[in-house]
View 1 (tube, rainbow, N blue to C red):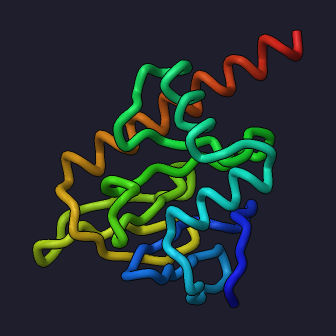
View 2 (view 1 turned 90 degrees about the vertical axis):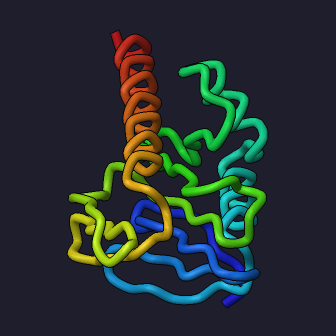
Amino acid sequence: MDHYEINDKTIALYGMQNKTRVYEEDKSFIIDKSATTIMEESCTYFGSSLNGRKRGTEKLIGVSYKAPIIVEETNDLIFFPTSSPRCDECSWIRSNKIDKFYYKNNHLMIEFKNGNKIYLKISYDVFNKQILRATRLEHVLNDRKKELNK
């Protein structure tokens, strides 16, 4: 498969060199593109660009470096990068699908709500900071939705 759009079942894009293991709630598979390319194409599919979404995040919560991204707002498809999106090994994680995370054997173990687990080479503190940013973005987005529905 060489084309993929992020959808409501997507929980993580695990970056490898020029390839990505896509984790969905019920399966995983490899795409012959970087995780950031999949993010870019998915943002475009939903009517924006990755850079446009980055600018939106900066406007909403003031974060521009390793910013969480709202891929699609009605389903709260918010992902955050584990490193600079320019790196081939950058992974993108959907924050509201994480159950818990902890350090094990010099790697960060992420357990998702569906039972899937992935290991990342990232510090606990950096990962925790990324989750906090994504959660803040989701909170601001949901507050805006509530204001519009009044």
